[in-house]
Image (cartoon, rainbow, N blue to C red):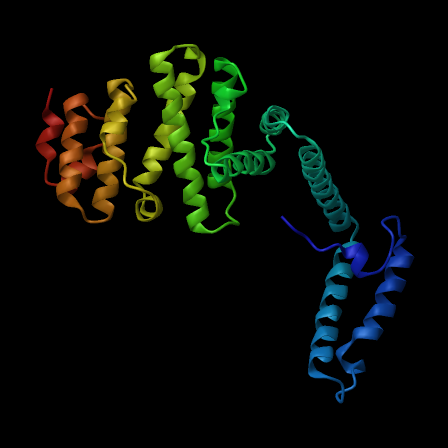
Length: 295
C-alpha cells in the first residue's frame, strides 16, 4: 500500500505548525497555479505543473484539517513502520549465508503475520534450489513437528494474501489460492501417515472447505483448476457438513445453468442428509421437491 507523503509535497517538516502549513501551501500554489504558467512553455512542463498544483491542493486539504491530519499521520506512521520492518527482514536475510537461518527468519515473519515478507522469503528459497536442480524441503532443516507448523503458516500466508489482498493480478491471486490448497492437503496427508497435530487438523479442514467452495464460485470456477468432488469426501467431515457443501455446490451449478450437474450433487447431499435444511428452493428449481419427503 502506497500513499503520498503530503509533508514532502508541501516541503515542510512533520512538526510544522498550522501557520507554516498555510504559508507553504500559498508559496507552492502561486508557483504551480495554472494561471501562472507561461503558455509558451513546453506542454509537458505545463502538465507537470498542473499535476503538482493538484498534489499541493490535496496535501493542504488534508493537513489543514485537524482530524484528517491526525488520521493521515496515523496511517503514514503505520506504513513507515511496516516498510521499516520489511527492510529490516531483508537486511538480515541478505547477511545470512545458511538456509537454516533464513528459514528461521521466515518462520518469525509468518508468526508475526508479516505474510508478504514471509512468502517472498519462502519463494526465494524455493527458487534458488530449483535453479540448482534441487527440490527445497523444510524437513531438511526442522524436525517433523516444526516442519508441519511452518507449512501450516506458509499455507495460511498464501490464503490470507489471496483472499484479503486485491491489489495483485487475478492470475497471481489464484496461484496463491492453489498453493495454499496444495499445502493444506499435504498436511492432511502427513497427519494420516504420522499423527502429531490432531488439535489443528479441524482448522486445516475448515480452511480447505472455504477454498473448495471458492473453487465452486463464479470467480473461482473460471480461474482455478477444477477440483473433483472426491476431495470433499476425503475431508471426512460429519455427514451434515458434507451434505451442506454439496448443497452449496448444487446451488452454484444452478447459478451457471449446469442443471444436470446440480441434480447429481444435490442427490449426493440428500443421500448423506435426507432431511437437508434449506434445500426447498433449489429442489423446486430443479423439480426435485419429492426429495424433501425422504426420511
